[in-house]
Amino acid sequence: MGKPFTPERLAAIRRMRRARRLYKQQPLFAYHILCGIYPGYSYEEFMDDLRYRRPPRRRRGRNNLVRYGRYARMVQLADRY
Image (cartoon, rainbow, N blue to C red):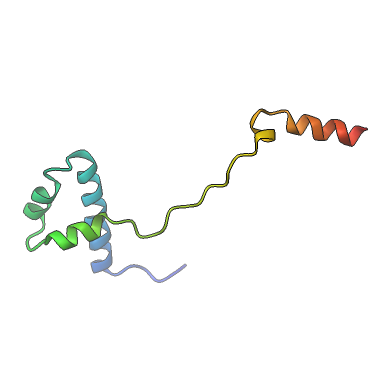
């Protein structure tokens, strides 16, 4: 497999996951709680931990013919014809 993560990178990933989970549960007090857990934790690091790393996935629009479930049957009947 690939190269394993360094201990610093693993600690950063764990901190980021904890920050996101706490922010979902208690958005007002998440930063204060994390400051108690991690000494020297700044607000910029907190905001950086909360931001998403990759762009959202694009969704394709739905086709009206497929939406109601008759399109496959119409194609099947057209093939038989």
